[in-house]
Image (cartoon, rainbow, N blue to C red; front, side):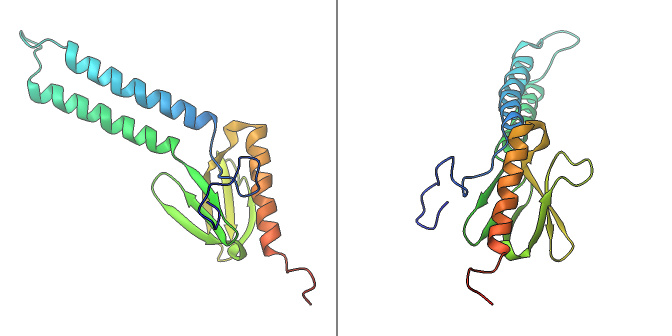
Length: 159
């Protein structure tokens, strides 16, 4: 979000970073998971040797919803740049970093997503920029690197 509280336009340097392919696959998988587990709970026999109790059925649906929620969370990955820093929202943790503390942006080793190399020698995964997105991911990593470079360079006219 911009300082005024509005979401920057898609072509803006401060547009939110989001995965494409991974988010789409996660959403479709989440819906499929919920449907399959619910269908399984509804179609299993309620009588006979292989009968499922009501508890079995409810727990199957609950498990399906839990898997779907985890997959949906994967679809919500993002990195939100602002003039003061970057908020990285990964699966479990959220990181708020200032531009000055980021040294480099790239793909470290075989990681499937971009990585921020921090001044304190830590690395932070930016799961919103996924290598599986191909050229789009490269452009997004370059845009993030440009933001880091822009915010880490001294202001014009400074000694």
